[in-house]
Image (tube, rainbow, N blue to C red; front, side, top):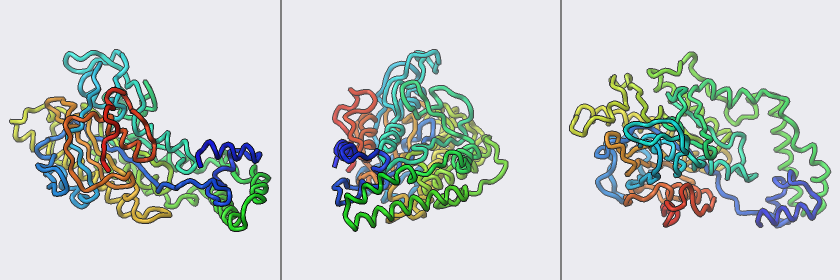
Length: 438
């Protein structure tokens, strides 16, 4: 039954909307709706383009062979989807890095502004629309069955405090960038510190006693038993929350190493801390959408832990004929692939709470970049690597497209969670509809 019919029922029955989560699955009221399995989305970003010859498979299809950069992900090959030939076709103000970053998930132009990019680009401001991660977040939050405490969580690694179109890929709306939290201790406090706020913990059931009693007179004996079990679970959760900060969690917060400063040389440890927090937040169903942003567009991190002292951005500008620079870039991008593998491994090793399979079976990881290639600043052939499941895509394939607008990929992500958008971002870049990945 549609949401409109549900609203009509509770109005005619003299009930409030607050009682709906308790009764929507009761067969004798005919309000049940097909339940979708739990779905989650993680967008992982690494900057400055890739090395195409060491990234993309020589052959598309199911028999693709992983090139050097992607070899860390070999264990997840059968749950992988490589999308070559996806282009960011958003034009307008701003340089390639600015449009590459702030149009990456929004698929729409930058607002006019006074931030000057490189070369002869026109100054620009923030993106003029919502990003796909926040669009899906809002869709989940609009429904009782998929609503979570935070909706989405934005993790950063080495992003630091600079705020401009090179540093933001997530947008709550036009001109509304969402800043990633780059300090794992701050993220830990956001996730678990508020659990101790007793003032905000009010009973859900107490105000509904009279209405639930009324519902019991309308339903079958079997449904009354189901309703009572539901009430009992909610009451138990309320007791757990009010008796201890951690006891309401399926899994307690991870132990973080102390004193790890948000500094360049600590990026490897900070990455693992943030990934551990991300997975823990999913286990506890605090959010079903997350972003994990490594540094930023024009990111100049120095990967000293890889014995590379050159800045990443500077290296990405070296010509293809500079063999040493290409080798270093391959090494850097292979390291990023290893961090994506760690995230996928953690999810694969964690049983789906209350369900079947692993959390990776219900989570889609999308690893991407703002550029296809650093030294050309191309917005064509943007790297898109998907790992996991839950969206109905046919995995275990390498697909090759011909400069398809990335807006169509974002539509496919929205449709994968049941959000049937007709367009996303710039409307005229959605011609052809959602990219067929099933």
